[in-house]
Image (cartoon, rainbow, N blue to C red; front, side):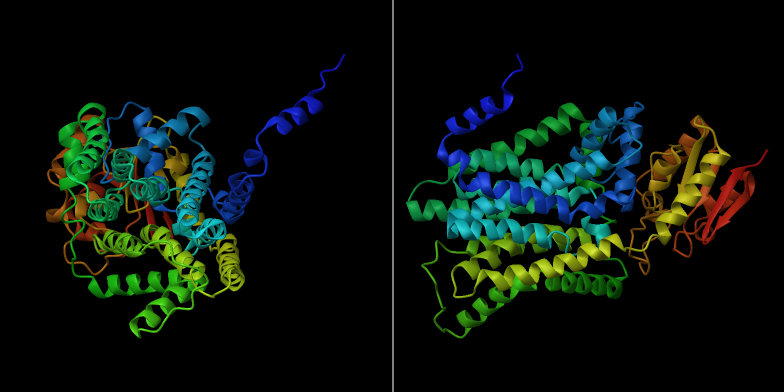
Amino acid sequence: MPTPTRPRLAGLAERLPDRVRQGYWTRLVPVLALVALVTHIPSFVRPVWSPDEGFLATQARMLADGGVLYDTVVDRKPPLLPWLYQACFAVFGSASLWPLRTLAVAAHLVTAILLASIARGRWGNRAGAGAGLLYLLVSIGLSPEDTQAATFEVFMLPAMVAAFRYAERRRWLAAGIAVALCSLTKQTGGAVLLPVLWMLFQDARRRGVRWPPALFKIGFGFTLPIALVAVILTKPKGFLFWVVTGSGDYASFGGAWLQMIGRALGNSAILAAAGLGFLLPVGRRLWLKHRHRPLPVAGEEHGSSTDLWVWLLSSAVAVSVGFHFFGHYYLQLMPPLVLLGTGAVATSAIRWKPVLVYTTVAATAFWTLALAWPGERLDRTTEVATAVAAQTTPKDTVLVWGMHPELYWLADRKPATRYLTAGFLTNYSGGKDGSLNVGEQFSVSNAWQTFDKELVDNGLPEVVVDDSGLAPYQPTQIPKIENLLDTHYEMVGVFADTVVYRLKR
């Protein structure tokens, strides 16, 4: 007799409590999951969206081949995301980034659910659903290269919002752990510690209780995971240098201040356009408050929004650290902005429909832009990677002199050095073309000595790809690289402003 599967499942569903079968989250989460997937469908249509993805993918392969993080595999970022890439490659293979893109969609979904929980607790069910939807719609409201890639900021957001949510509920130990996880994904995620501490001291003042015990819980929760990673799972000295102390010159203001201000204003304007539907109510609220006019309130406001403004301020400071103002940095601003907008709509006479309609239209425009995003740079990089693979064998090493480490991953060839971009050896960082602090003398401490030793111990790379173009670190400006090419290599291919050299026979 066949097993009556369907009746059995139906009976199981009937036995579930009503709050599960028809509850708020049971209805909301599937909707949020669908929106999260639809808004990030464009992320799956390209093999790689940004150099950060290429860097992480190459790192993961190096780690899988026996590399040691913060020793023979280096970066200025914390270790959680490189380890996640490595784990995904171990399970699914390293030929595609689709598992990471899937996890990125999941990270956006978790962030939306946490924001919905915060908003629901403050302003009710409708506000919770609105916050979750607004976040997912505005999460693609920047350049597609910044929002569709599986990079640090995306995976940082769930822990950041969780830290705020735990603090709001006075779960101080969990809040400290969440801040630590956020910081171990990207250093600037630790900025959420400021609103966490603000809520602690405000809670202690309102309730008339002592704050040191709770502060100890936050400190313990924050310190323990970082100590575990720094002391046990990585090399302590290497972790301290690469994650904490070794980025001073990279994060300096430099001399490209006009370029940086232009990027800051440009990305701010793009984000403002994407979120104008809920940012206008925030501006209106501030204006009415400034003019001391009574606010048109549909219901009593549930608590102060000062903690949200502290969160936004700390995120703005985090975005500004290093004076790079890349678009993906602005993802950190989205959660507090969404909550402020949700609160402004929920506690005023403004209706939800126009807010959601505008944000949906804006998201549709960004979604369409992502599908139609020009692929000339990716096409050229793929063409160069194909040429490199043809000129080498899997046993050969390659040196990419540039800022596009995805060439290593696309060509499936091992790097000749632990320094995957020219930035480590010259202090160049993307978008600082006018900076004066670029050159051999501005490299990471002892980087050139390490680089020379790697070439001596492992042999010269079979192929060198000069991807510098007209950047201030082009070989004619870096005597060591110019001498290396002139002495040992011959040109074998030119692709636009990218030149491929092969070792002389």
